Amino acid sequence: MSTVIDSIHNACTAQCTVDSPLGPVLLARTAKGLAGAWFEGQKHHPGALAAPDQPEDPLLKAAAAQLQRYFAGEAVAFDLPLDLLGTAFQKSVWQALLAIPLGSTSSYGDIARGVAAASAVRAVGGAVGRNPVSVIVPCHRVVGRDGSLTGYAGGTDRKVALLSLEGAALNGRARNKQSGRSMACA
Image (tube, rainbow, N blue to C red):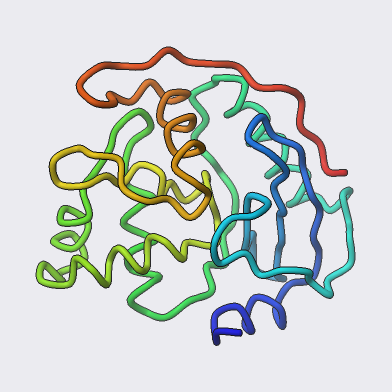
């Protein structure tokens, strides 16, 4: 396991799994905030956590409710305390992702320039791919410099669905918003 995954395993105090239109999402929190939101089967998923399953945890309930509104097509400004566990560089990249507006995209190069690491585009890509809080920290909004859909740890189909839900321009045209099904911690 990586040091970051070890940190997540050691720090998580509660977890629950919610259903989404794109598959189950594992939510995990620490004493400081939401530390994880991973789609089932995505790359860098931490696997089974030792933290207790607590679907009634107030922070996990709030995260599930905000995700439900997001998947229902509402323009949600996620308002949750986050505890992003990673290296200083990864955290700087994840903070930059939070600045990408709903319905917009940014390139890896744009992110690299934004974190004062213009020549570190590949390192930025690695940090984007290891984002532990999918959807809420919007790594799906990062595209290639020509606007092409590059990889996504949750799978390219999910990336397309998330960008379409947000009405982001894909391949030169906007997609329609979709609504999702109900979500609650299971």
